[in-house]
Length: 511
Image 1: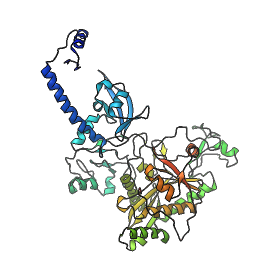
Image 2 (image 1 turned 135 degrees about the horizontal axis):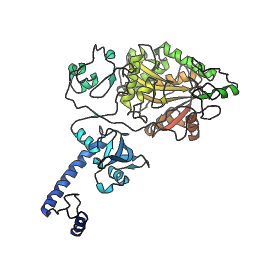
Image 3 (image 1 turned 30 degrees about the horizontal axis):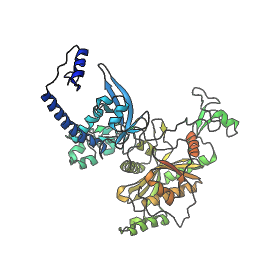
Image 4 (image 1 turned 30 degrees about the vertical axis):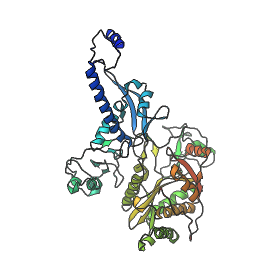
């Protein structure tokens, strides 16, 4: 073995190697080589066990951005990129799932045989570094707060939990001043037995979590989206008001050239509207109905829907009290100025984050808070998204995100029920409320992205069918529909639900 480059060589190869290196290398004694080999074998065995933790629960999350780097004398070069998926790495150039060793070979560095020391995450740590940190009790988090208060949804001067990086305004916690040292939210304080001192600001010895950025799971269309809904062209004027100025409908979010609107006889705009603008009477009517529903606040669900909940409780032998007959629902606007809506929105966001891995965009930011609070993030606009919740004893137990793109189509990209209340009929009741509301607006169809394991429930129990690829492409060209990677897009015709009955499935395992 060469002591300079640590290559294992035959005697002949070593001689040639020595000539090439002007004989600066020295052959190690066999005894040294034997000890070295034994130590390497032991180290490799320990490392293999250590590295397995990266692909186990609470290890490296799916979607974590990874890249293979080589280090030169004056720079570090990135060879290939990918992201962690399951027990492997999905290559960014060929979309194949590879083992770490295969990923290294794919980068042209098979001879190194040290993928865990050369594959790095977005924060610069190697896989080996992260495995060591996990073995020492550190946690991995993908939620860095998104610069948005988890209670009210606004930005500003935020306080970040030292453990989970949750962001909150001190005022939302009724704190008179910023705590000194590390601060922990109530959940993390309870989980780690830190008590009131850590919550109020006393420093703790809990190791700060490793923040990992995820690759996108929102599926980007493979074609250009947007453009005028009339002429299908993408050009627009940005400095002057003329025929190529683009106007957006405040309900369906379609784009229109001012000139195309005039030529088609829809309207003749002389300037950019100062107030809301709608492309048709249906969009104006739907927008008005949504605002009225938001202002009406919490409503008792119909008796026929509460009967579904009662039946599920009876089937499971659960206690039934007057609260079962007083289940409420409401539609919330993330930009709401009603103080009573903010805790409900915060609860809905918590349910989605409890039931789903982070829904991430190209920037690595979690989209869930932006969707709940109707914000723009990473080039995606969620201003038309509404949050629908089901409430039992003032507690949100089930929630969904709803966006209505005019009379033709609406989407329900995310629905979830708290784990404590799954299987009790709450989601069925919430879905019935959503469908009846869409029916009252004469919305024709409802679409949603469904995971593979939930396809049969949506299709066989709820009446959805797979949307044709051509139809989906047409919607994606005109609308910012939400499609997640690894899901199928389903659609169903919205039917009028009778006031005195409801035909819903008895179980919905993925709630």
